[in-house]
Image 1: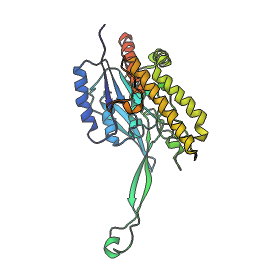
Image 2 (image 1 turned 45 degrees about the vertical axis):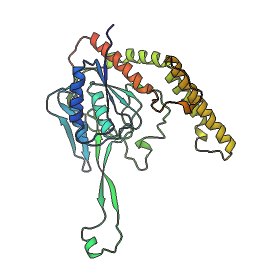
Image 3 (image 1 turned 180 degrees about the vertical axis):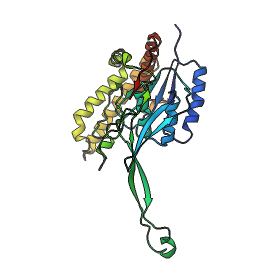
Image 4 (image 1 turned 30 degrees about the vertical axis):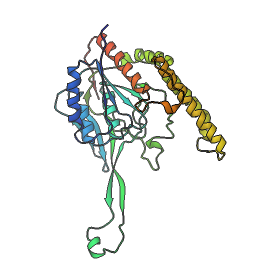
Length: 331
């Protein structure tokens, strides 16, 4: 049986030059004959809008990527126009509650085009652009050097919209396949920020879908559910979520009793040691007597990424067996 390769690109932020860097990595992955690619956008708070547009353009032939409305109500489309696709294979985008702004623009574009499968948690929901302006006048420092600086004001100047017309503000991007999470919407997200602008919509842009992943949804979800039900790491996660939910009303309460705090810390350490030893046992390695014996190079597993890789393998297999169809024009 031939083992399939999956390429994983971890993108921590949309810095200037990101697209060029990704092009290089895509070329390397193509030479390695990867079956699918995973774009990891977890904890990616965004960055340059131009990079979100150009990065999206690597995976679609051409077309609008995002709509931007200014404070005068004028809507413009930022589009990919080069007509070149740098990677045509199966694509999976991994997001979490801390994926925001440019990350959401890219994920939304891949979802709306039917180009990539989105997995993980609902994203942050930051669909606005802010600008800073100094309150000092340019001649204040010359005429009144002894005056203190007046600071600056931050105000919103633009709002982002998906090509399907809906804003990413507040709602963010909902994954096609949801991962178990202990992060509550009410704790993290733009909609819970003070004075956050409401969700709204504009007219949808005209675009041609690159594919349709809908036929694979039920099959992928079934395989995903079966896998995580038997995965020890996800069993740990479910136990942690249950424990968190049981204690969440008391999570901001710290006992002043030293013995009680010591007991809680010892229980946490014992749980971590037991889980590490379970992993070592599954790998056929000797177990530890205490956490201090843990090697410095020990790496905690990343079950979310591991499962995303499995989903990418499933998608590659299903797409290979699916006959090609002409994608519809969306409006």
